[in-house]
Length: 224
Image: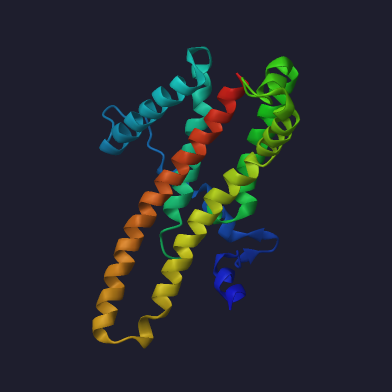
């Protein structure tokens, strides 16, 4: 039963060796507004204001010295939010609901931060393993706990995004599958519940993209 439920999220259509469902990952690039018109559209103005807001917030986290690095995290937010939003459309594959996709985003970021931190700021990374004011007897345990928390960071980032996107889609699928077997009045209630859940999923798509980008920025700020 559970295998058949989760199978709806698996890519199925393909041409030769190329899975067509994964091409939806790059469809978000089509919706990026162009900035070269004489008079920008409202969509371009809204997107520019959103980028400026994210740039200001990420700059406060990273510090003024590394404020130019915010383009990486703004691009990451844009990529995830478009994939999450496109996944709400019928017959569009949601790549962000797969652990392969989310882990491919989180693991390289975390690995890059760790390699750079241990190479350029070795003393700071060692000092970060023992919080200030830790008793001497607890230092070995704190080193172990901090090391484990650092290692599982990419996994928690990936699983958080994947689980939130999968849970909403799975709940929508379960509710819609009961439509043919319920009465007329229950069908109206089910329809209203589906609309409310779809609105909630739209908010989750934006929030989870923001959380992923902010946590990645926080991990980078610890290195710097």
